Image (cartoon, rainbow, N blue to C red; front, side, top):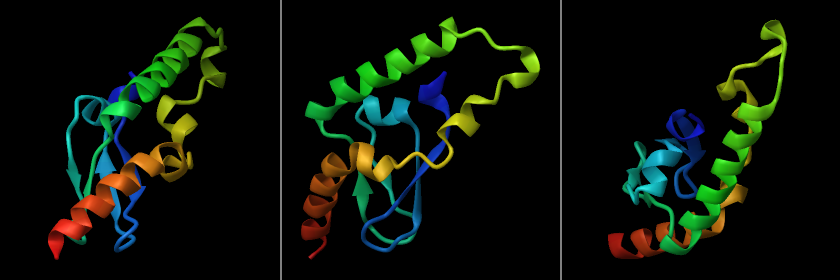
Length: 103
């Protein structure tokens, strides 16, 4: 559910928006910035943490009871989340590696 919602992340190199999904990150996919050659991925060490948080959030969503009119879409709940802060250190490490490889 949450894992398949398209998200974006600001590229720390060129400030373009990099599209990604949590499911892709958790599967080890690498997402390339559309504005520069930077590559974003989630470190192996961070996958378990992100997976646990995502699973817990999905569990909470399933157990909450809402009136149908009061239930905002899941995408709205995640609008504005600071993805850079949530998974930024892992992304920065990968980006630094990728940027160094660019020359």
